[in-house]
Image (cartoon, rainbow, N blue to C red):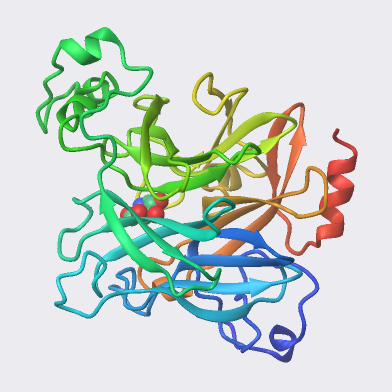
Length: 372
Ligand code: DGJ
């Protein structure tokens, strides 16, 4: 049962309470699931999936929500940043489509805000597996929808082997060696002409302004990291396969001390599973697994505190201060999904997550100071 809303919920917040109802400044539970955050001109903007009540509540009925905050605890509803199109309009983003994991980045050259998200076309389940892009002149929107597609049609990844390009790997649906054949490139080859599948995704902008799109491809078996064009609204031909057959979803990427770190989940639908972490000196090669970042009870380790990663937020103006953002999904009533925000700390060069009932940004700083 949902706990009653108390005066404490409505007062100005001074801490994070992972998993509890998180009310915005209007007193409503924040509706920005699978989200991502952009810091712009002194404010944080949280974009996420707007969900509704009931078992069908994962379908996009309104679009992508946006909230703003100066302190990360108190969030103002800025309304719907990208609105769905009218039902039966034939638009790719019409009401009833699935819009997941929206992420927004700012392009310094074009002065545009660019939103990418995972799109599933209405009435097609999760078969479309497309990525989609929208742009705006103002951070809070309205965002104008541009297009959706499966990326890299007719292009091999930079780390494709000669065998990938020349020796067909044939796989049938009930093939006992399905996982291995897919890891070996069966779906990469199958989708070579039409474009690669793109589901759970995130974006990362590097210090030099290069933006990357990181997505679960090949039936969520293999991650694809792709370089976006200079204006961030399209894909270049540069991409790589990462952890083939690794079944990684929900990627979140951040950079610390010149290295790139990645947190992902495993592949179990809405049910939580154990998180993974990885590191690399370069975005497009050399990724190495670092294991489960969670420290705690067996249950916490096996379920990532009953949640799934969505974003890692660098806290502005503080060195090495990162927040791990995750979703505790409620598939039977998606609007009631909860947010798990925890300090992301480092131990022995590895990202580490520990449960906190309640915490503040000050704690985060103290933990990180002892680190680097
Ligand atoms: C897990 C993904 O991480 C979610 O974003 C969503 O796509 C669900 N699967 C759907 O089952």
